[in-house]
Image 1 (tube, one colour):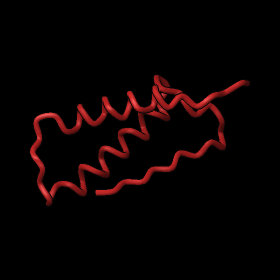
Image 2: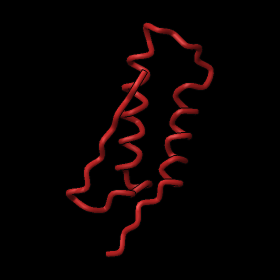
Image 3: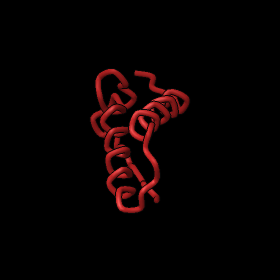
Length: 68
């Protein structure tokens, strides 16, 4: 299987999740930690889901790093 990583498609998924999660919200220091965790988990779930199957190999790891 010839697999190439497609960063443009992944960026589109990230952009969509950010818009879904943060639209209509105003920054709150108390809620920022939970927003970061929810956003990173949503992105990971979508990238590993069937619709966005970017990681076709069983041993392919997804690393996430969130900074606030």
